[in-house]
Length: 215
Image 1 (cartoon, helix red, strand yellow):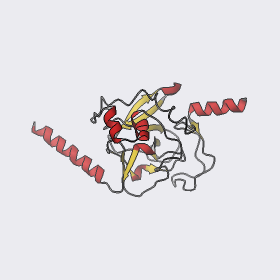
Image 2 (cartoon, rainbow, N blue to C red):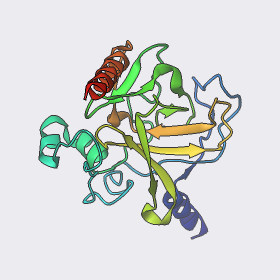
Image 3 (spheres, one colour):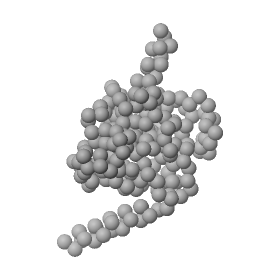
Image 4 (cartoon, rainbow, N blue to C red):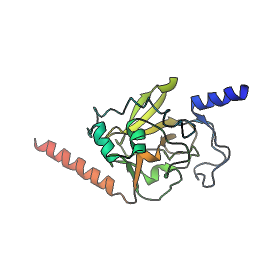
């Protein structure tokens, strides 16, 4: 009985511990990762149920530049991308293609609108089961208070389309420049091996500023 209650507590509180260091554990730290708040460690058949909010509470586009409707998003996203990006779902830990992806250059972009979010240099190995970044491209990620399931967390979304990325955690002891961990769903991301998405975004912002100055 006690062991059952313990497992239930750890599932609902979203606390995870890696049982042993991963083979390619980040060079930023030595030894096994500490107990940390993370995304929910739940069976894959429950991952569609537990997320940031109930599935019916879709990501609102009212305050973001990309104003596509749910039907328009369904036309360009597959079922799993829509569930996570627009319905704030969570992929099972260790299942994402970018969890152990460590390029030396390149940019991670939003899988929905392709806005640049993270540089390859921001990524580090945390052992949490999801891609981890210690920082984002300035202005690319927006933070929201998340009180789902009786917990207080900080949700992160794409600043351009409001697509759900995951959560950010502070003070876990990783020796990164920010001591933050952006815990992101791989399904929320795409990857470009060069910096072209960043350059394109900078060019668009420069043109927008120039157009405003002419008014």
